[in-house]
Image (cartoon, rainbow, N blue to C red; front, side, top):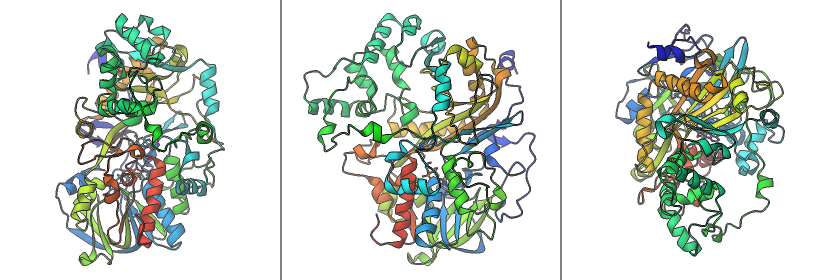
Length: 634
Ligand SMILES: Cc1cc2nc3c(=O)[nH]c(=O)nc-3n(C[C@H](O)[C@H](O)[C@H](O)COP(=O)(O)OP(=O)(O)OC[C@H]3O[C@@H](n4cnc5c(N)ncnc54)[C@H](O)[C@@H]3O)c2cc1C
């Protein structure tokens, strides 16, 4: 280890696992014996088994994806037959799978026996909780699904489920912590890095052009362009009809539109490239210009491009009705935990949306024989098929746990995994449907939770969040700090806090779907050490001027890698990604054909609506359950 690494603190003992070429070695934690009450023993579990507290490489962690990858490339297993039959087996214990189990019990059979199988060592899917303990205090963050976006506008089914599990979206507000940050003068800033822009420079006062950028490492021309884009007052398509404008914004990426019509040069194009990473997991080079318009990104001066002519009347009360977003401290992992607490009696104490945040879950009860609903983790389904190929017969479900394959059976199955995998493990999927499922595509994302011992440097520099257009992580921010009854956020800059960092692995220049595939490949190859070094380096450079020392101040790092992240679909004819399904005006919506049930197998999950949102996960669960009991559900 060189002196630079030592300065960064690469030798420091922090809360993490060390990873060598992606293979996890748990340091300092004993390997738990197979949990006595679990028939499916859980691998490499720290004792007592409590996966939210595991740090290091999480999300698609080592051990969670290998069997699935082998299955889609043709591997088959000799399975032991287990004498277990369930009324319902749900594949995938993300929000959709958990909702399917909940809705089945509520609407179909309150006494049903249900088994959920998930390949991860924790439930929740993308809605994953990250926990750290420092000096006896527990800090909670989100490893994926972060928030409910405007839950007051959720469709009826999702609204009802959310309410039934105890969430009152009126009850909570993030504002106390926001107010604290505001009172301390913290806000968004931009960090220019020397490799991309020629010098490290922190521009305070906002994310787009601010007075502070007068000294930024940008040419006078670029500053003028950025100021012009920030003001966003020019109509670059002046004199054109809405239809002509529309033809232009539908044919160009946001980047190409800005270059061609707003006349901005390379420096500003570099500045905007990662602007859309956080929301859409794609850069300006592949984000359609009309999507940038829809998002209100600069360059359009509020121009009419004709979309409102198509029956969308707009809604002047929309803002008020929409209300705000809703954050639990661990993001939507709290929704998963509330669902599990409903499904598995005794798994956790408490009965409210507030006490769910600090409720300690007893994972040993998840798969207990006496439970009407059982959750079996670290279990990847590698084969499912109707007995003797008869679509009205029971379904045989084979899963791999710790390298061993077992077959169990069910009267009904909900597949709440991914469309793209299903036909590889289920011979009952008709060919045309398999082709439709093959159009689903997933964007890779990485969310990091980094526990720091204090945020004095951020208070000193006035930073709440940083946009870093040229750096490894495009976003660094103080994680959303929700106040709920027995959970208080970090109250002062002298206290520890979890930072949230994002990285979207892409290959700019390629079509979006290919960028996702390339990003996914690189993500599986990237070891924890690369993330750690970049965390230390980038935080040191951004926050160093405020006194931050990465070797001293970083207390824990959790990397949540999601190679199969946001659910999208590709139109087979055009090759376009359907970025926003409700605006998808091409004839084909392949996800509708793709999600049809097959005999006793129904399909849930966000691929079913090509919409990576929690409300879709719940709505799709409802549709899937309905399709098992009625003939005409689609
Ligand atoms: C980083 C990130 C941030 C996000 N942020 C938000 C947000 O803030 N708000 C929002 O509304 N949405 C967000 N989303 C979208 C998110 O996908 C949905 O909100 C929702 O959590 C998806 O739930 P799901 O159950 O459909 O899928 P998942 O959460 O992916 O769950 C599916 C589960 O099934 C498992 N599985 C798949 N195949 C098999 C198999 N063969 N055997 C066993 N198990 C299997 C998967 O591994 C996974 O655990 C985010 C997504 C990501 C990746």
